[in-house]
Length: 472
Image (cartoon, rainbow, N blue to C red; front, side, top):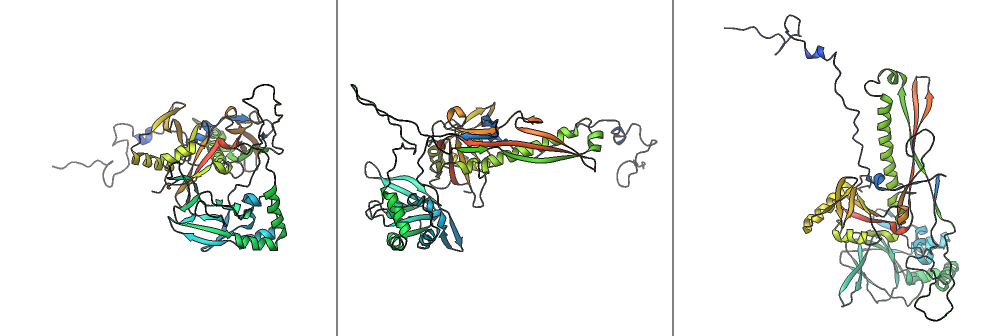
């Protein structure tokens, strides 16, 4: 017995016909129905925790001035190098980062001094200098990691800190033939250093009276009294009785305080009038175009607030607030040292891959992380400090990254975000959407602008754990 095949199904099926169907086909029904749809989606939207947790300060004049107490800078910066193949050379002008050469401005003498440095390679475990021995050379760390080792109370070795790329030691060798090394320095990894023997420096100083005179003035200069932060000291008397003469004092300010100008991220949004006129139901095309454009601008804003060389957090952390990991991966010990460098650390920010590396270190030690709540959202925490993901913190090609620790708010002398509200055509706080007209192609143009910056009120408000290895 045979049956007739359904002409609307199977191989070689023919389109539905009024004679073959007994009900309305879905393809025809869709012509009368409105589909359920989403608004346009975007993969590039992140949590943007930095923008969420920073307090925002109104900058009415477009410029924010940070007044501080006078600080005596001693030139404790990091030295930079150039390399050709395996040969490394210090950039002559970078020698001014050494405290004795801070204000020395003779390019020829700096060039001659840079040419006297000798490149050395050391293996892990090598001792570069030994505590108590004569400090007979200047050492610049071009690449690698070293430990500064001192002697504990009971004669045991104590790691006092880590030296890494750009650090230096032994500049006292330029000032006194009787100087000695205060600490032992031992290589943790393979290191490349540049050394300047004191004998080579003395020979150069004999040929450069300007260099010799500059170092002599530095050696005999009277350093004003200052506190441990380098600020001009305030004389205060205490513990006295009777009627002694009290000291007179005043609080000195920086003569040229730093000013932060608002930065801007902009784009021109273009929409054809035909689209804006005819295709606005059920979703307004302009609103959706603006929403996605603003999301992109906010992502760029957070990126700039982390990475911009003028005001970005990674580039504005004080050198004394930058530390290195002791072993490479981000261990609990490293996090403790990072948060111990400031009072009231409120937030830690790290790339999601760095947070994963932190989690591996916790797991290896059997530590179960606690959580904190921010705006109803639970997040991981260390010592009660929220650990927030920020994918704007870069991951370097060598699989290293950084962790940011900060205190926020003007009342805490912390980090603040800067913006200006009440600007013309404001669409969101600090963001404007300005109509620019319609061109000859019937395209509507809108200028979308976001104004922002960030300021660090005092140096210890911001710290960075650098060269965190996340590939292990």
